[in-house]
Image (tube, rainbow, N blue to C red; front, side, top):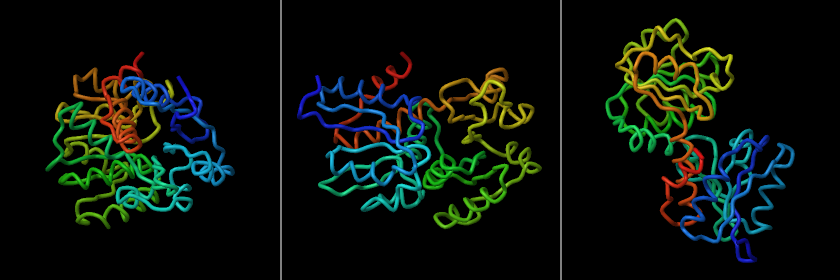
Length: 278
């Protein structure tokens, strides 16, 4: 029951109607008996500054930030966590006594999903990361903080992969990060232990696999961050009986970390996951 004491959290994005975050967060609040509610709010780019100001005015407990605001929101905040500073993007805002602190739980959620859902140990692994956008940036930073041996970074836009590589090399030994073009992709996948799709390729039923299925071998673990459909990449992996996962674990775990930042309570991950699969 919503009362005058109910604390409000939410997610700002544009568009936002597709978001599954209200389902999992409200299920979590109910499970723990917390007097919170989570709502999705459509915020156009030109309204972002006003929306962020409203967090203080309306005394919201905190919000998630999604496309297209993750970078644009940074100048509007009072401070950033070390994680958000490293990544250069924010997906979570915590309201602390009038101060708005930006954090980023995407990369941590990805790492937690790998470790807890898929029992993958990253130390010493070679990873091919396809996609140098916001998701790729978060994942790349977190991979390098978890002692991987090498990161092969691919994006069809050469300037994007080169730009991200420069940033990643600033937080790790430079020789750990290698940019690769289309011609170098087969050899990199052959050497790799993990292949990650951090692009939107696969969201449409007509999309091809983000990499040629002929390159996939049973040595790989394949992680596709797309969670709302089975991509051509995952279909190819399953045909070849290659271990793989979609992005549902990342979605749940990044949401759980945000939940814990706002409430100070351990997130009921099983409940959150069940809410998304209902």
